[in-house]
Each structure stands twice: as structure tokens, then as C-alpha cells.
Length: 219
Image (cartoon, rainbow, N blue to C red; front, side):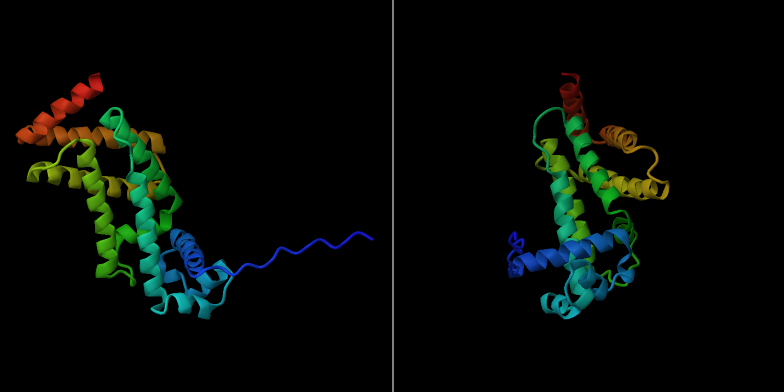
């Protein structure tokens, strides 16, 4: 008679591992539904734990869990912006947009609810988290352009473009992800150069920057 197969030993999760498990479950749900439609029972079921355990880790309830999940998503989005300072600047920007659009695609419902606002779980803290990602994106772009002290026109242009990218992403989702992501990416890169060109006509710093970028792109 052959011996019965052994049962894998149960391992209790550490506090950090359990918290990460709950955040992963919450992020998955918030990516598919607006926050109002996600309950703590849903998170508990998705994580395979009890509702009291969710409260044990997030005593502030769904609001605290949502803010923690949002911080986790914001950190993931910041990682999308990380790009080595190698190669032509516009090629770097295109690679960042590829990762950004993949993130938007993966978190479509949650991303839309977050940027459009109006959620009952939206607070000054959640708004600050989102604004932090926008500031990080602007700093990354200026860093790749080797600008350490941007003037107001250049800084405003970069932040306006970031706002336009967000708006385009929402419309892209509404339009059934059309045009294809690669085409949208190329168009957004062209939009960046276009708005920078407009600013360059009025701002010497931006004009000098555009000359450097074009020289780099031309090899």
C-alpha cells in the first residue's frame, strides 16, 4: 500500500505579508470597480480571510484600506516612470508611455474613477497622493531633459502635457482603447514636442532645450 501524499505544511503569514495580501486583493477589486462598489466583505472574500481580519489590519475600514491601496498603486505608477538616462530623450519618453498605458489598461475602472473624482472615498489625502504622482512625473521628464532649474513657462508646459496625457487616457478607455496603444503613444510624444515648440517661441530656456533635444534626436 503506497503512503498517502503529504500535505504541505501550513505557514502563518507575517504581518507585512498579510497586509500585502490584503492590499493586492483590494487593488484587484478597485481596478475593476469604482470604490463605492467594493465592500470589506468583497476584499475579505478575494483574500480568502474573514472580515474581522481585514479590520484588524485596517481599523479605519474601507477608507483606510482604499488610501493604502491607492498609495500602493501610486508607487507602482511611479515605477512606470523610471527610465535609464540613456539614448534619445524621445525614445525614453515613448518607453515610459508604453508602461503608463499598460498600467491604465490594467487598472481601467479604478483609474477612471480616481482621475474623474467625485467618489465618496475621495479626500484631501487621496488627492495629495495623485498630485504626488503628477509632480514625480514632471520631475522625471525635466530630469531626462537635464533641466535642474525650470522657469515657470517650461514647468507649466510639462505639467500641462501631463494633464493632457491623463485626459487622453480617459478618452482612450471610453473609446474602447482606440486608437491602438502604440499609435496613441506616438501621438502623445508628438503632442509633447508640439506644445514645447509653442512655448519655445516665447521662452528662451525652452527654445535652447528644444535645440538640444532635436540635435540629440538627429544624432
